[in-house]
Length: 400
Image (cartoon, rainbow, N blue to C red; front, top):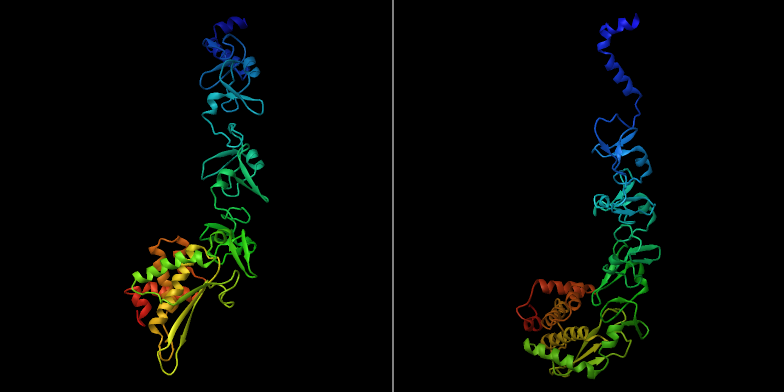
C-alpha cells in the first residue's frame, strides 16, 4: 500500500531531483560525472570513468597520470614526454617555453618560480633567488652580486667585478678604486690617483709635482719621479736648445733678455732656497758701480738639476722675466730696485703665455693657477684677471 501510495503521490515528480543531488554529494572532489568525451592530456586515452583532474583551460588528466607526472615548477602543468624541457639543479624539470616567460635568477640562471623568495635591484631590474643573493659576494663598486664564473678582483677583504674594476680609476698605491674609498688626489702629469689614506707612502717629484712611488732620491731631501729623472735637463748642453727657444720668445715679444745672463744648473739634490723648497729656480741681479757712474748689471739664473723639459722651459721663462724687469726698472746710479707690484705674478703670466703658445701639457698650463707657493698663485691670478697691453709693457713698465 505504501508503494502504491508513492506512485500516485506528488512526491514521485521531484524524487529524481533528490537522487541527482545525493549522487553529487557522494562524488569524489577531484572529478565530476562525465557529461562529454574527455581524453587524458598525458596518455591520450579516453577518460571513461573514475576520478580525474581538470584545469581551468580545459586540459584534463587521469588522476593516476597526473600524480605520476613531473610538474613544471613555473606553470604547475605536467611535463609530458616529447616536450622541450630543461632539468634544474634540484633535479626538477620545467618546460623550456616557461623559461622564456618567467624571471630568471641572474646568479644561478634558473627560473624564479611563483611564490619563491627573491631579491630585486631597482636600478637594473634584475632579480635573484634570495638564497643565491645572500651566498655570493657583492661588487664593492656597484653593490651587485658577482655571479659564479664571472671574473673578479679581490683586494684585502673587498671584491670587485672585473669588468667594473678594469674601467675604474684606481689608487696607484693600493690598487683600490678611488670611488667609495674617501678623499684622493690626482697627479696632473701622470693622470694617476692616490687615496688620501695612502698618500704617506708616496713622495712628491720636485720637477712635475706628482705624488708617486717609483723614482729616485736626489741628494738628501729631493725626489724625482722616473719620468722626470729619465728626461730631465742635467747639463748645459741639454739645456741650451730650450734656453735659446725661450730667448727667441722674448725677442718676439719686444722684451729681449740681457745678453750677460748666466744660467747655472745646481748640483744634483741642491735646493734653490731651503726655506722655500717649492722653488725650482731663482734669478740673482748684481748691480756694481762707483763714483756716481752708471752701474753695470749682471744676472745669474739658478735652476734645479733634473727638471723635465716642459717644466724646465716654463721655469726659465719665469726667471728670465725677472732679468728683463730688473734691467728696465733698476736705478743704475743707486742700484735701487723700486717696489714692483705683482712682480712674481708678471713673471708667472709671461711663462703662462709662453706655455700656451708652445702648447705645453695641461699640467703646466693649469699649474700656474694652482701653484702651491701662495703669493705666486695669487699674483698670477691678479695679472691674469687684468691682462697687460703686451708682455713688453708688463715687463718694462711700473704700471702695466
